[in-house]
Image 1: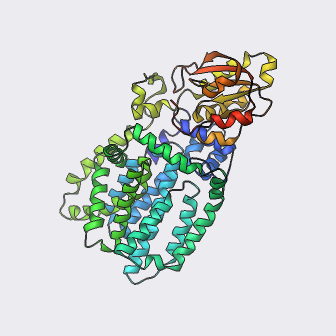
Image 2: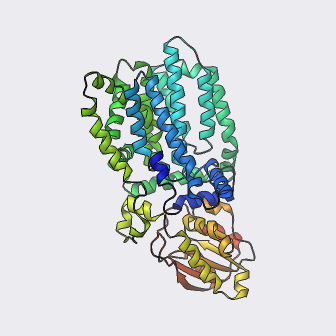
Length: 481
C-alpha cells in the first residue's frame, strides 16, 4: 500500500475512471457493464475533492491492502503459521499492487470475494472443531449483497460452492437457515438493478456476448486464457503458488474439509474460460488458492530452507510487479505507434494521457462555430472514454452536453430535440453521416501524447432526422473499430 500510495497521483485519469465519474453523474440502479456502487464512489470523490486523483483512487488502494491482510487470515484459518500467512499475503500484494492504482470495479469485487471466502473457511474450520457459527454465513450474505452492487458476478461463486459442498461436503452447508437468510438479503439488494435490466431488455446479457467476442479477438480464449490468468496471478511465485494450492485443496487429506473450495475454484476457471468471460473475472478465487499453497512453506522453515526456496522467488516476483507502477517521468513518455499500442503495458500507460487535450481541442472547434450554431449544439463521441473525458472537463471550457452511443453511455439519454448541430469526436461518423445536412472535419485532437491524439473532430450542421429515430441506431456495445 505504501508503494502504491507513492505513485497514486501520477499521470492523469485512466480512461475507465473518466467513464466512472460520468456514470456517477448519471446515477442509476444498474448499468450495462456494472452496478452502481463504484460510479457512486467516483461521484463522491469527484464532488468532495474535484480533480484529485489520489482521492479517486484511494478506496481501491485500501481495498487491495485489506485483501492482502484477509488472505493472510484465510491462511491462518487453514492452519498456516506466520510464514505461510506472509507468503500468501505477499502473493496477493504482488499480483494486485498495480490494480490498486486506478479506480475500477475489479479491485473492489476482488476484496469482497476474498471476504466471502474467509467467512466460509472460518465457518468450516469452527464446525470441524464442533462450534456452530452460522452467523458467519449470514455475514457472507451481507458481503455478497455489497458485491452485487459492484458486479453481478458473485452468484457464480455461490452456485459452485453449494454444488461442490453437496458433492464432497460439507453437505450441511446448503441446509443452514442463516445461509439462505443471507441469500435473501443479497437478492433484495440486487432487485432494483435486476428490475433496471429487465426494463431495458437485459443489456447485461447482450454485453456478455460482446465480451466473449472481444476476448477471442484479443487472443484470450483457450490457451490464451490460461496464459493471461497466469500472468495476472503473478509471474513466478503467484502462478506456482496458485496451481499448487489448487492441487492441495483437491488432493490433500489434511485439507479434506475444504475440498469443495478447490472444486468451486476450478469451476470458476472452467466457466469463465469456456464462456468467454473476461480473464480477470477469476481473480476472486486466487486468495484461497494462495492460502492453501502457502501452508507447505511451514515445513520449509522447519528445515531451514525458507530463504533459499522462497526468498529469491518472492523478490523476483515483486520486481516484476513494481515495474507496473508510475515510476517513469511523464516527460519521458512519448506517443507510441499503432503497433506499440497493442502492448498491454503501453496501452494502459497511454490511456492515462491526452484527455484534457481532447477537451481543449473540442473546445477550440466549438468556439469557432457561429453563435447560432453553438446555441443549439451538442457533443457526440464515438467511444464512452471520449464522452467521459468531455464530461469531466466540459464545464471549465464552456462546452455543451456530451452524448455517446457507446456501451453504457447510450443509456444516459439522447440529445434534446432542438439540438441541430453536432460536434462529433471519432474516426467515422457512421449513422450520423446520413442525417447531416452538411458534414465536415473541423479539426483533430492535438497534443504531445495520449490515446486520442489525432482523432478527428467533425461538425454536423442541420441534423435532418429526429433524435427519437436516430438515437436507437447509434447504440453500439461492440468494439469500436
